[in-house]
Image (cartoon, rainbow, N blue to C red):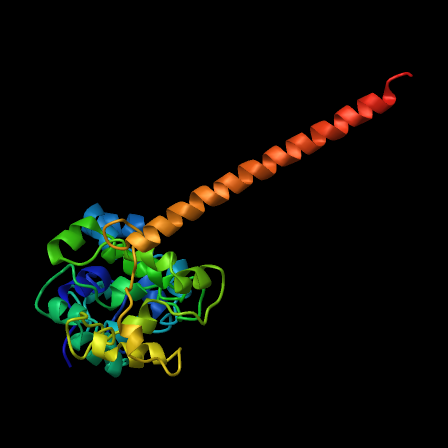
Length: 289
């Protein structure tokens, strides 16, 4: 089984000691005795290291993986005084999630991560390390409502976009689309990022295997839109309403912006005139004859 990238080590497994005797007797409470105590960690391994290995006990208890630390971090040595002296091996999510790890390893994210790119997303980047929640949980970063923001953490980052040559403004263009607006206002059946790009087997559009390759768009869109044909591949995706990229949408939006603003001004003016007329008529009626 291939291991995850070095980033997972930094995020989830750089532990320096714990209150355990050996791998057979470890329990979550044993680990939390040390790793949820900032002062104890700071005294033992220093403030900088303590920040890396500190675990918020409330966050961990809310996780669906809150029953057995050793399941993800096996191989502790039975050191004296119940303190493990060596770092545990890299935690592999694929031990339980084989198909997901296989797809991630074949994706653009996984290929870069396995080649040592510390900026490439891995399991903890999207799901978190010790506070992993179910996708259905509204607080999960991969919940349908939260997923666009999670993806945008990288895909709207100017430094990352410049370094990797990826398109910008992914979140803005998604949220202004029908799908984005529907999800924003609570329609959880509308498409999110994973609906089109997949959850783990994410490939660039230029890859013939990619779900968003032009040849595959009818099939991808057809999951929600039965009968989707080749016309689905001809339209623009992640449309930004600018004169350069979409002049038609740009001018239509400009027209409606000014048109609606003008209507509002006319409505307000009409209401003011009407109330002024009522006031004049009332004063005239109340004048002594």
